[in-house]
Image 1: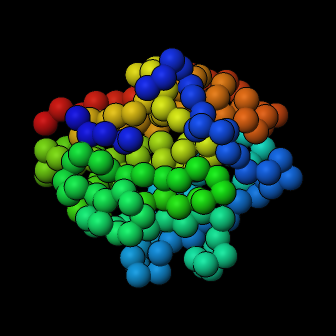
Image 2 (image 1 turned 45 degrees about the vertical axis):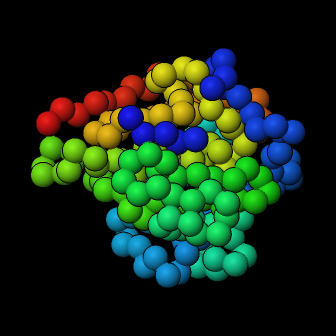
Image 3 (image 1 turned 90 degrees about the vertical axis):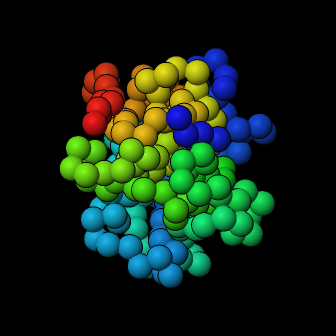
Length: 195
């Protein structure tokens, strides 16, 4: 089992940092040195959309990494933020609450980007979109949840795809930012793949 970073149900970071109420449009950019594929960038767009579906927040990709509200990058080992990565499995990623907006992923992980664990993926393969949705919750100020099916649960096993927000995630994020009037309240599920 890998560690994302527990508390009864949803939780917030100490001091409850958040994006200002007037800031509902957030921009994100990728570290230029990473040179990510179109598929990976689309995956992150879907992950941000999960949070937009339930809040009034919108997320737009920009090419200006230095000016983006949210800065996403893949790093290995000690990368200068006091939170070094530890190689395959272990700590997969970390994100810093508002207003820092930094989102770092371990570049040494065996990331799966198509959600398919059955076609020759290593046993240690981790679903990138699942981790992205979780870490975006941290970027928005959510802490960890004790509800196992919640996106904000602190761990995820390799071979697991969990990208839909649970009721606990929705209640927590809506307490912070309010509701998207178009949200229909459907209950999510997650899938464990066996090899």
